Length: 387
Image (cartoon, rainbow, N blue to C red; front, side, top):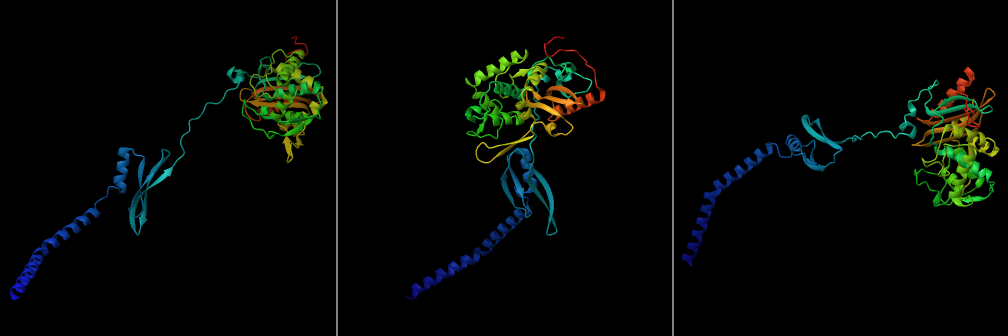
């Protein structure tokens, strides 16, 4: 028993001796690791502001490091409309550098302006004594048909919603029932210019109401419904429009729809002056085209429409008939019958650039007629086409 106990004591003694002998080595190794970690902490990490900025500039990567005030970094994705902005902040009295991601508006290339047919033909370069903004203009005495001002009046151009003046002529002279209720359908949707309309599919109005808002507010779906409801449909209606133009001696005129949305509806200012004088003979056209506001009830809540020509509401003007029009190919257009100093005048303005330029041209002409009382500049008999 005693020899065995002696051997156990000897083994314990040797093990204790080995542990004590290796302790300085383990302590030195631990101290070395601690020192290495401390030195590594003092060195700039790969994700610091300077290192990350340099890496970004070199690699052009779409990943950027955003450095917080505490020196931490996190990776954030960004797109081509963002950039890093360097900022210096003070944190606990110490200077810190941060980088923030800033979004900026992309540079959008400017699109070239859409040229009208008149501009493409260079008509806008034509000068006139009144410096009108319209490429085409015609002013004449309604009673004598004497031309007072002529600017490219013989050239046929797109006429936009001035087309609706001929639409109204065909409707009125065909003696259709004005109290008949018409329904707006999918066929009345504008697939030419994709313009909007306040008349929803299924809306119902009398033919009189459709004509009213088509003339006063250039409501396209109303004009489309008027043409579509004609005996024989829209093709027969367009044929009647062109037949009426020929009957009036409108030799530079051609129609393809009842709205004027197509740029293929064309006419010259001379032709349009004939149309204005013919349409003026119908009291209903005079009334509807010169109303300033009108309320219709197509189903559901009432809708109030307003005139497309603000001169109608101007007390300085005495307007007996008017119609405006606009599409890109036509520019801003307007025809009017008005009385100035007791003299009945017909005005036609085509291809005007600027939302209110056609009305401004009319103001220039009115002032010129009132102040100068001009004699005829060119004697052109509009009624028979003789010069």
